[in-house]
Image 1 (cartoon, rainbow, N blue to C red):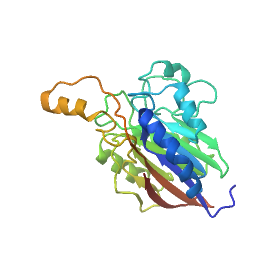
Image 2: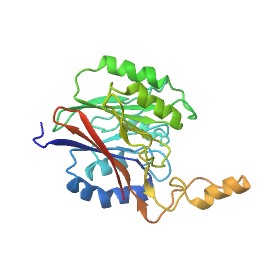
Image 3: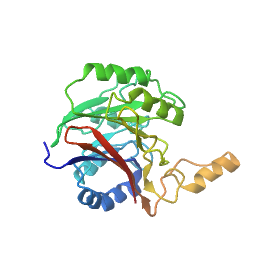
Image 4: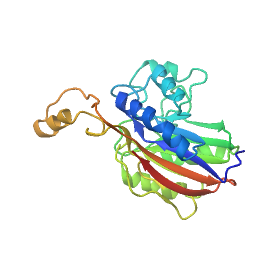
Length: 262
């Protein structure tokens, strides 16, 4: 167990393409040092050049300081990852509530320098075109089956803010933190809920700043204005870094959440 007064975990919003990866490489070492980060989690479902993730890119980002990855509805866009995710040592989850029998894990208990960390990955049902079971019931099912952990973090990858807020209330007091991802827009509602669970609706994204949620703006504008437009392409240029720092005391009680944006 760490001798520090606080346990600090950084959660990085959806990393998008090369711009996002380069931005992580630029800022993560600085943030890890400044805030004495004990563990780093990131949503990695957009690590490739448009959507999806592959093994080589994920392991590259693991080497630069991201300890573990969550994903979402785009996790299988690169078909090779259906096989790669199940390979030994892959530090990544896919949503636990897919109804199809996909390989990989939807939650893991990991041994860290500060204790046992349970990470859970769930997809929302509203507005996401995937076959999933009820995420609220799935969370309860997972928590009923796992008892050997000190801190628990849920990445709730969901479209609708209402569903995310509802998940916060449902999970309050049951797990340590509910971290929302998927919309790529950072929210200003970071808080500790009534029964002690850390909550935020969406961390945001780590990717090209001058873009529409990471995609070249001209492509999206053409779709909205003319009803046409080509294949989505990740924008380039300067990156934005969206993340939250969540902290716990030595007894693993949640004590604060802080946005760290660059």
